[in-house]
Image (tube, rainbow, N blue to C red):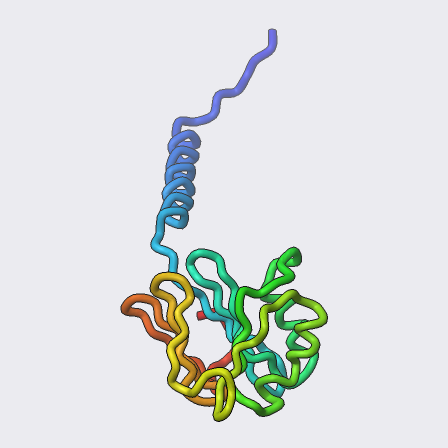
Length: 163
């Protein structure tokens, strides 16, 4: 006769607790209020940041000084994403716009919005992207991203990472 071994009740209780914990974590992530994410990219000498809005729009702020922006974007973005909804250049120096030609060759981008004297926008101008997401360029390489009561100031001294 074939004899089966039964699992102890504690195993089933442990399994049930694990499933409840996993389920609550997934639902919390699904229904959590969405906020913009700002990723400061490591581009060597220069500045670059990627802003992803709650509705999924992707904004590139500055492009660094050279083609190293492509490596940083390849790490920060999924492989299938090949376009940006907006590109913002905060200054006229190579450290902010040197990699723009490389980005233009690899990605589909709208005409960049340029800040500075005698450019598209003056410093301090407010750019609204969908309801609640606002970007204010204060100076070359310095800008704020605001969403509701949350405001984040990014500058050239901000370490690379996601905020």
